[in-house]
Every structure is written in C-alpha cells, then in structure tokens.
Length: 319
Ligand code: MTE
Image 1: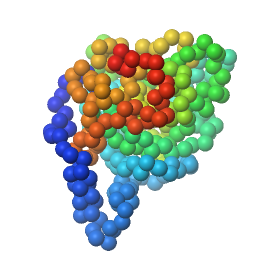
Image 2: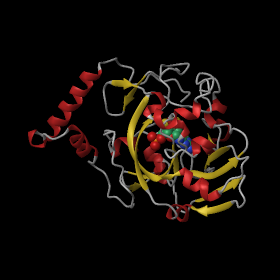
Image 3: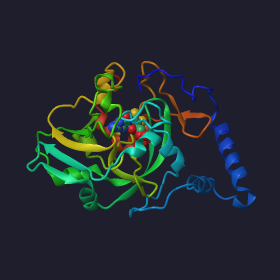
Image 4: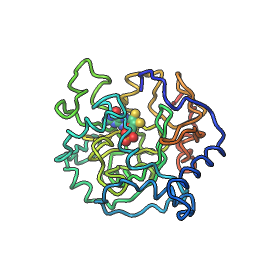
C-alpha cells in the first residue's frame, strides 16, 4: 500500500447513470433476450459462474440492500496479502503452497482461561452465517463479497474478558516456511507478524465477522484461510488474514500499517470520503470489474450501525 503505482482506476470520472446503462447492457448482451429479468438476478447469475461447489452449511443473507456481488473469480484473483507478494495478481499462485491445516489459534490476554484451540474445533462451536458486505480497500478499489462466518461478539462473550480489556489485538501466523516475504528478514516489505486491533465496542458490533469462507465455500488461501477478520465499515487492511492469535489487551494495539507509515495509516481506518489519504482522494472508488468509479460512502454505508461509536471523536485526527 505504501508503494506508489499509477492505478488503472484513475482513468476518468463518469456519471452514475451511464455506469448503470453500461452494466445493464453488458448483462443483457451476455445472457440474451431470454434472460430479460430483474437486473439483480442477471448479475447474480453472472456472479455464480465458475463458483466451486459449496462445502459449508450456513444461514443465507437475504441481501436486503440488493448488493451486486463480485464474482468468485474476481474475489479470489485480486488480493492483498503481503506475506506472499505485493502483486495483487500474484498472490493466488504463490498462496497455493500454503497449508492451512492443521492450524491452531491462541486466545490470551485479559481473560481467566487463555486457550490454544484447533481452528476446526473453534468453527464447530458457532452457527455459520452468510454476510454480504461492501469491502473497500484504502487504495481506492472495492468489491461486494458474500462472506461466511460468525460474529466476533459470540467468541468474545465466550471468552469473558476482564473489564480492563479495552481492545482486541489480532496477529497473523508467523511462519517463514509458509510465507516467503517473512523469510526475507530485514528486507521484508512490512514488519511481521501482521497485526491489527479493534476497540472493544467495535469488536462487539454484530457487523464484525470472523470469516471462514465465501460464496458458500471454505476460504481460499489467498483470501486468508483458514480464518480472518472482516470489518466492513473500515478500510480493508483492518480485515486481517490467517489469524493465529487473538489477545484481549488494555492499550490500543499498534497495527502494522500505522507502524509502517503513521502519517498515512491510523488505528481507526474508518472508510471516510471526507478524509483523503495524503497521496490520493478517498471520495470515489472503483468496484472491481467496473469501468467507472462510484461515490464512496461514509463508514462504507454502515453509518446507521456504527456512527455512534465515534460521536465524540474528530475523524480527521483519528483517521
Ligand atoms: N492480512 C495480512 N495478514 N496480510 C496482508 O497483507 N492485507 C490487507 C487485508 N488483510 C493483508 C491482510 C489488505 S490491505 C486488504 S485490502 C485485504 O486484506 C484484502 O483482502 P482480500 O485479498 O481478501 O480482498
């Protein structure tokens, strides 16, 4: 993210209406007149192309906002996972060598009984749900993903943290054999292990998801197998992948991107079109697979659910 590149999406600004016309026309041409049904159904059909068979049981998301899903191919072929490479198109291939099984997770810090648990045993404890979320990267691209997982709040309640646990800290596995960039030692792109954190109220939001799959299927390695976080109102870098440790702590954790470039990335990282990145605007975003940019929404469209967390905070200072 702190590598300067001229992104594809910086081509031109366009009106929203022409974008809709463009998409409708493409869907129509692809499926033919026989499939002249509601637009969302057409896009749904397209999105389901090339999706491997489902292997998870979960409660379906009714998709009440009628979000248009990105395809499985798009979500699993354009990734940020620095432990492998900084090339978004290169992650998928390199991640094939990763073995997310067996995988243990340590849960520790300000709780009575710290545990080390096998990821499959942990997952079995919770009913899985589909959550169709907008996902906005700080770099200016976005997608809509049908994640599968469970609310982090359920795990937190089961761990019964002490009252002085004000934050939850997450760590990605440290394994030089698994992750080539970690093996580069002091020449690594970012400091490892990758670390993220949430304030306790943010962590307890029902929106905050521990994800174990997408499109009904177990997570691909490149998307953070076997278990990752998804925080849909924050920039994508908060959604830490391949978690191996969850700690309940008193002080605000220093997350990886804040440590790497504190003037550019903060702790909160709430999606906010009014607070630009020092090197680019955050007013608009390019949805993967679309030619034209769309407006970015405050808290990525989840204002109703999360705005109260920040009511007394200056979002420019706490970026
Ligand atoms: N987690 C780890 N461990 N390493 C990473 O490099 N990249 C982050 C986040 N989680 C990252 C990570 C960033 S910048 C983004 S945008 C999302 O993962 C990308 O998730 P995706 O590849 O599933 O779209």
